[in-house]
Image 1 (tube, rainbow, N blue to C red):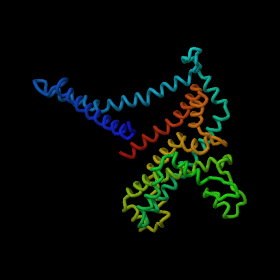
Image 2 (cartoon, rainbow, N blue to C red; image 1 turned 90 degrees about the vertical axis):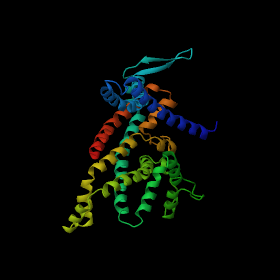
Image 3 (cartoon, rainbow, N blue to C red; image 1 turned 30 degrees about the vertical axis):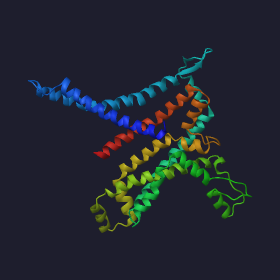
Image 4 (tube, helix red, strand yellow; image 1 turned 30 degrees about the horizontal axis):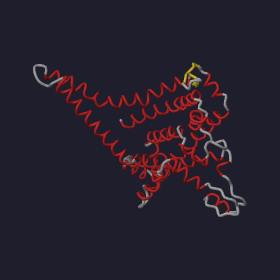
Length: 339
């Protein structure tokens, strides 16, 4: 069967299944368990209304349990065991305790990945949020601001792998005797460079070239959220500041930013979570070579290349531990903003 038809059938079955579930479960609740008739009609209606919300929540709880809670528990278990293939081809697991964690912490590649992730955390959220805030402010002050916003937001529609391929061409290196298709090397030679540079092989700097891809993508996300926040600031507040003699810079830094501080932090932490999970860009551009390894790539190498499920699962748990506090903090602040 053609993949397109498979996709259509899957969507129809998914939507149809949800509709059938909600219809049949409500019918069962109202007509079988608690029929609204007889001397207990009022009590039955009350009981049905108490249970009804759980009918809607139950599929989500099952999905979260199956696709989120269970994988976390299983990953934790695997991180504390060693996977052994027996002579008959079967797989066995032996208790290892913290041995996998000790092995992981003793590997230079893990600390290289940790160092690079810290660099990404320091640079990408700050730059993407800053550029997004700047774009949100400037595009609201020009006539063709909506067109500019569309162009800035457009990279969000590109997958991380697609963006990585685009930037790999930007950083492309050819011998000096050939025409340079890489924009960066073309500009470098035009402004007096003597020899094309293999940008992605220069340690430390190559990590910044990779970060540029994620900044390019996430700036549009930050701009859209912060632009909505800026438009939510009461005009009376800004007009009062202008009447009091505040210049545009003072209005921006002392009036606008303090009022959207919560939104800025939500955007910042959301991008931080994306950074901690970054994999596609590094995998597609350098495959972790030339000291560009990050935690997600380290985990992938251990799980699917070295077939070391113990250390691979341990690195997955490290990523989860790093992401969880930020995620909880982000959700709590988002709820405060909604209130």
